[in-house]
Image (cartoon, rainbow, N blue to C red):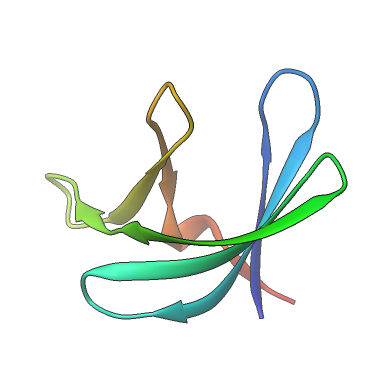
Length: 69
């Protein structure tokens, strides 16, 4: 399962890809002891890299930064 850890300024949030298509990605998100499963739209930047936007600041999380565990 592909995994990525994001630091939000207070703690690490772990994203695990459950399912992905060309247009969306479904993630299991572990945040402060809670696990949620959420689907996000995928976007492509000017360099052709896929990402989704997370949080109220719409932070870009790039799919290429996920590591296979």
